[in-house]
Length: 607
Image 1 (cartoon, one colour):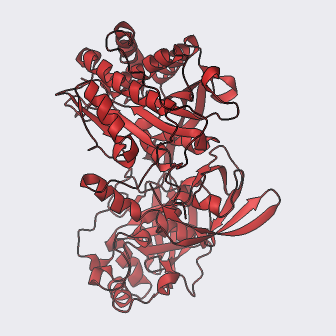
Image 2 (image 1 turned 30 degrees about the vertical axis):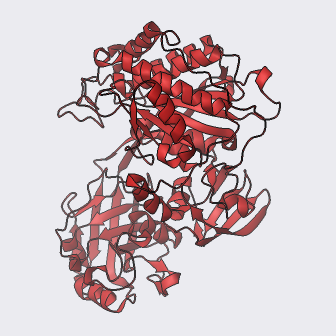
């Protein structure tokens, strides 16, 4: 089965590659580069924080540049802007309170010492009986189910962290596997009707009983029910009130690898979780430069994407590496005014060319500093990713030192290594693939969607994510050198008939590590329509050759269930799929127009 890692066929619409190297002296406008960087990294933009006026000013600036260059607006409603919402921050509100009603009376809990809401908890208020459901594991492959024979509908379920047998070194469950994750435990409980979920460190874990700080990334942005972490001391108290001993119960489960789930008689929880989230609107800025008619064939709109993120850290409220940075402008000259300036100059140079067999989509992404949100939104909402030949990402190209250029993702596209070596050599640069292609910048979103992508980067430095990342420290000679390499590589991608092929990783170095890790991750091959507000998750596209395509799924289908569990968000569906293994099969319930279909999908390997 094709794994969906890339588009592996060769296009036949283009002539053989032509060599058109960039003249070193005159193609890029040094004054324009400097002007772009100085404006984007000026105090006027207040650090281009997501959700701020400064980011909006930056978006308008990039859009105006695109318009002046004659790019076609391909954002929302005929504009250059593709707008979406991102989670900017979260906090625990002052109304939060939790108490336990026991036979001997009411036990009022103290926040931070007795309990903490978990980062992905919903806000909510409820009063409900409490049920213990072991580790919250349902594993048909192991004949194990903590929910067998108990009813948790409308109740609060209390779960042990980790997996059965781990504390005693027994059983077959992976200690860091799918069943051990917070997301999996909570989703499994929710799918069975739990009204709230309570996590607790088991007494056999032999480690300090620390509550997980609110704000820690748990693998999902939000869950549909209140979720809290309860201290071990409090959990043992409520078990005693129900006539049970938590340590004895955990030991019984771990020794026998058999569930021991039961309702805690006489125990009721009253909770009000005042979890507050701040969501803001931000926009990607996207413009399209069509293929030249003289070199193009109608009906074949293949293109490359050249992009850079334009957001930064604002006033240092999050992400700063400097102590007491809050309130200081983080101008982000290298990160990433340099990359955006590079995109604008590449757009200018390519717009003057009359030899473009493929089109180019130029993009400035928002939300990168929040976790690649803009590029992820683009790849998940695009309906034509199969037409993207490759993506070129410019991020922090302003501090070239020792003639050393980093090109992330290159080891995943071995067919381009010789090309990269040639063009880097023309600039007397050496290049390294040391930086990960999986998580570090916006190219990662394209790789995850099966699109070959390259990440041009000049390395970390002492001003990274600090207020001192200012324009006077940008190496403009270095920026031009990187742009000449990225121009020639991009031109190669426009001209060559063979589409590059994404592979699972190289055979040595850190590529081998990534290949081993990728081999454990399952790939579905769909994009999610984030604007859909109905029940389930609507697919915006189906990756050609991927598992979903092989199963006959179509763009517009709505995913309702995976293996009998309701799917209420793309994030939740992704967390279920990515904790499975390549080669496994999942059963999906799909709504297609007015029909509900049941489909078996054989998962493949992630890129």
